[in-house]
Image (cartoon, rainbow, N blue to C red; front, side, top):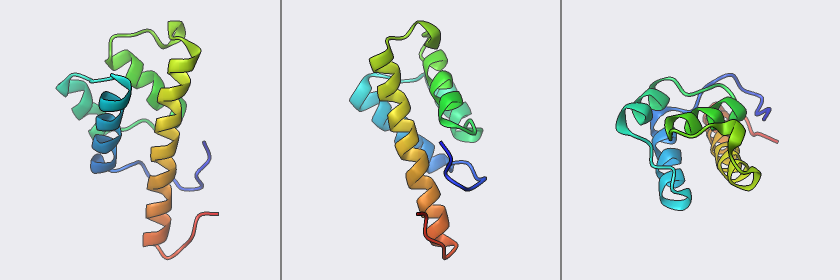
Length: 95
């Protein structure tokens, strides 16, 4: 994902993403792992996806492609929404 900005999602955005992953896809991470991701979210969608699988106690290398793609797509969408919000707040528009 290339969103064109160098900022991380903020903790509220990560919290919302993790809530959606739990409710919609069954990835309900333990509180300690949620907190860690909120404090220091990974920089890119692939790293974030792997971190979610590991926090769930799963090996991302052995995950089904469909499930992996579903989780990754949710993360990409959240990162894109975050980038757009940050750009709009700075007075720029993401193309």
